Amino acid sequence: MTSTNNTTPSDYVNCPDCGGAGEYEVEVEVIDHSNGGFIKGIMQTCEFCDGDGEVHEEDAAEFLIHVEFEH
Image (cartoon, rainbow, N blue to C red; front, side, top):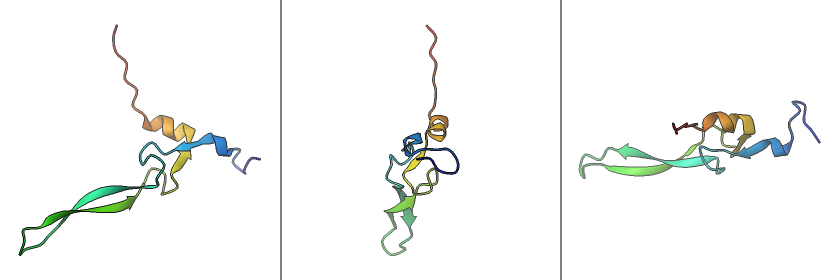
């Protein structure tokens, strides 16, 4: 079965940015004048897949970095 844009579920792969979770942890600085402050981890929605955890395989291929070595 295909959708209106001719893609099938097999055309989608796990998001290479968040690993398919749809979100990832980022560290933010919290100001605390009496104790000097601290770093806090918060979950942020993945912008590459918009929180879906999957992207079209062509979009995932563009995310990868291709490195060629000389022989």
